[in-house]
Image 1 (cartoon, rainbow, N blue to C red):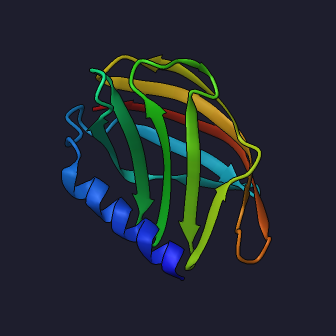
Image 2: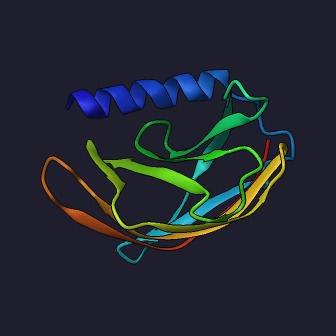
Length: 141
């Protein structure tokens, strides 16, 4: 429960400190979880300086505020296989963390991040797993 509270607090902070979407709401963050299509709304990108002139990005999308939250991280400018990492999904008071995710970042240029992902996520407390397929994101920030 403490991990869930911490994640929601961090997600809330990310929402409050991020740049607003300025491209008319055309950003996408979608995937299937155990075959059920999810399309995140309220997508934000939080940028934190790495200290070397680059940024650490946290992308967070939600459905219904904090009802369902999905997030991942990437370093600014990084593209290619597994350049996105630390995938987290919270739903129904259950938190799932990256287990065997595969990601490909196609674009990551300081104003847009685009890519795909799939794999499994695990609830570390219960051992339950969920399958993520057809994951895609295309976000301007």
